[in-house]
Image (tube, rainbow, N blue to C red; front, side, top):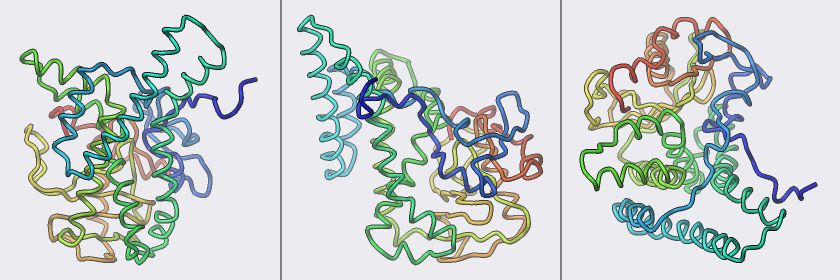
Length: 328
């Protein structure tokens, strides 16, 4: 039997399974819409996941150049971080090239290479999840004060940024939106597809840092829902609910109100608008209904709730945004 340290992680969740259990009524089973549009109840392990979703690929020199070009648009300290991560990936790639060139084949070496490709990005996302674990627990219990700690705020915003960019709906929307009108655009588009496992992580870091940097200009609010109509979540749990977001036209929104349900009762929102006041906000049923519709609208396959009845009103809204236009 192979050592545990080199066992490959095959099943990659693009929405954190632990996060989804807050809709499990004390269990790991949640209600969710299936690919066929039915409502099922099963373990969170069964949904918002694909085999080898974050598995790394071999990067060509052209891929690397395009990744670096994207990275140079970042703040300098983030660019340095991106390149450091990229260098680590390329070192591993060079080691594999040396091994392949030797002509030798070793079972344990093959298993180690496979596990490294499967586990590298999955482990990075897991590290952000672990740092956010106690923060989400506190927020679910209305303890907004946990974010008064600067380190907690940095960790939560980094986690938050990746909840936007790491999902399959976001990935597919970006892929669909890439122009392929000339040779350069084709090369960029092909690199985005081939190296999305790295590029999406880089984008998530950038969004997280931007949200942290603007924390004193944006309004950060905890939404408390005591209406009896629970919040739902989805396979793309952070959505822009700002009124400027077009439902029909392919236009990048000028502003963002990033909404993130944390449980059937609690949600977090980061607002460019003045819609909510800083701190704790108790919201009404109409607001819950609106936010649930927007979650359903931007989901791809799964909307997730704590009961069948929590999902039934929103099935008709599921994925409507994709049918109207190709990007969030």
